[in-house]
Amino acid sequence: MLPKIDTLIDLALEEDAAFGDVTSQSIFSADHLSQAQIMAREDMVVCGLEIAQRVFQRVNPSIKIELETTDGRQISQDRIVLRAKGPTVALLMAERIALNFLQRLSGIASFSRQFAKAAAKTGTGVRIVDTRKTTPGWRSLEKYAVRCGGCFNHRSSLSEHVLIKENHITAAGSLKNAVKLARDFAPHCAKIEVETESLNQVKQALEAGAEIIMLDNMLPPQIQQAVSVINKAAMVEVSGGVRLDTIADYALPGVDVISVGALTHSAPAADFSMIIAKQPSE
Image (cartoon, helix red, strand yellow):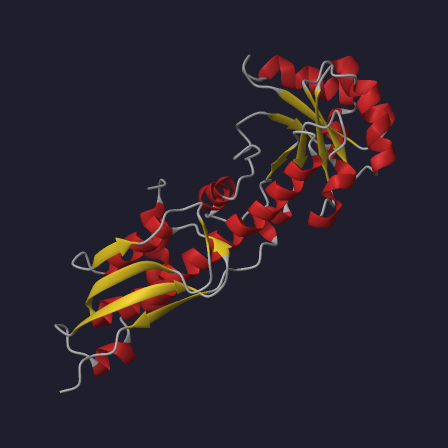
């Protein structure tokens, strides 16, 4: 279980059912029991099953859960992924929240799988990584979903390594000064990455001793020139506007990493539904 997941679940419950579920509670007694199943409504990479399980058990610990598959698996439409048994009111109270976690995380995992496959087809060994463009509070979950889809994580927070961007350079007076100040302060194990927008900046980053050089919003011909200038003296990251249908244009020899914010900020939600089993007729 990822850290602080109960906090997110509790926030969702407070948002959706702080005062109960008036519909379900008006129809069913507290001891009314049901069986439910969550089903995928499309082909997808599933992700978030243990979190969905935790949602049900957070609502009512007596709910019994059976997971029918595991995170990271490619599944087909109509596949049952989770079965639940317990008080009907609790099952229905947990339904939307559990589905929200599943649809968001499975959507990211499925989208990431498409990018991972497209990158693999290029044969260059380039890694597709995410960014910090994540839903507030959900970063660890969304980055977990990216990994389930077969892509990789960039830094998870501002504290992980140095990434000098345009505003840092402007405020520091120069790229060289920004790198020097960062190197004087940062821990010895922290790599220094510099975002560049021109070949001139690439050369400056190299001279300053950057370990990673990000080529931001450069076109493929510019990237080829920059890779030649860098000549393996630093890791090369490409960022900005790379789409699923253009990966082959950017996954050029010498490019190590392509960062794609869309993995988390633009992944379409996966489609799930929960179905309560019919009760026997009296």
